[in-house]
Length: 204
Image (tube, rainbow, N blue to C red):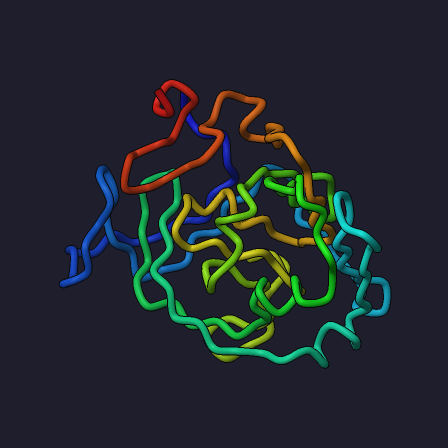
């Protein structure tokens, strides 16, 4: 099954001292990969909501979200289309910081990330905690462009990058796992690059 992303060209590079997951190669570019048209979200209309299995939903406007504590992040990222990029430079808000603003119900174990434009992807709640994920607002010192998911995107570096939903608008907490957009099309429910979990058959 071949991925059906829109793709701008990029250059391969010899692997550096970083370790590459199976089947990956290093690139110095940042390929533009999307499942559909690029949404353009006016900042005055942007919101992020935590909902689902929470005692009370929490919603931020763009101004409110940018007032939250921010951190710098420098992860390696890995795309299912086989490129990897090392030492990427982001600034954003940790998911740990966001979770301080809601009381999760005990049965909450999974999350559905939803984007402007309707894209969805599922994640275990544990993979968003303990410094594992953040909402990226800038990349390489500049505001995140719409092509790369701006004004804000989820970034979960330890999973294949389709799990890092662009144009993020909500995180819905769930008791049971549910497939998102690419997962319904046969992609892995988890997407671990180190286990080459690209497709559903790779989860077995």
